[in-house]
Image (cartoon, rainbow, N blue to C red; front, top):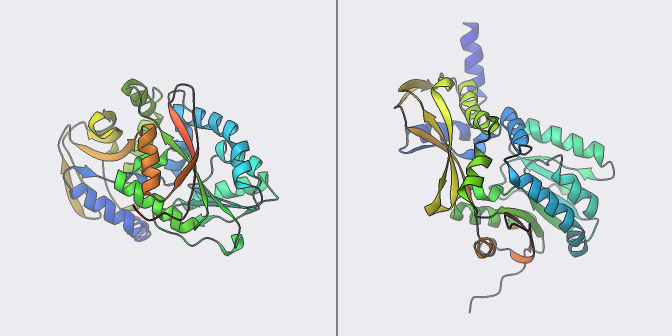
Length: 325
């Protein structure tokens, strides 16, 4: 009886949007669950591990680009404003920006509350002169900024090419939501991954140590824990593949044997070789990226890329849009 009460309590605490996305996604054909649900505490920890892997080039390249670009960002944006980061701050990237821009306030936004609070505490300890205002929320939608940043100039920060996890329409919607959250006259510093050799890309999303596989499979652990499910996690394997027609890396959870399970009392069955699509990571050429930002209401003012053109960093402004000719 006690075990059932505990399970019922856990289920009642589940995010209703998570429940809806999982149940809808498992019933759909093809099956798919949005990638944003990777990021419970364990998922966030695993993603931080991924960023340190030798195969995962984006973090190393973007970090180097930030070191080169941040003096120019500071010249363009000034000091004493507010930095708003969409996604909890990385212990590597965020301090590079904060040291150069020297803002009065820092606002990390993340859907994972525990990871957000831990990240905010770390930044607050490392930068005691900066007021830290964590916001737990879904930045896919416009958000109200903390009163503490008042009328300060605002610099949005969206590193890691997370924009690539969305389809083009969803990415444009996100950029517009960021523009609305930050306000007219704000700036945005954003990382966007380039199109490149599929061999490089697949290795980056299917590393030899199996950390990315653990990150993908952790989604099933989360479903089991939060939605009273009994998915046999060992019946699935991580798959990463390049979809050239859509210019994206796809991550899937593939069933290695016929499997049946329940999620909150609903029964599901999946055949061997069938998959649950869990993530896309779209890649962009230089003109594609500028067009994407423009469609989202942002005007690119500066661009930085590495010598091999593997990754790009953009600074853009939320300027008043001219009327169409």
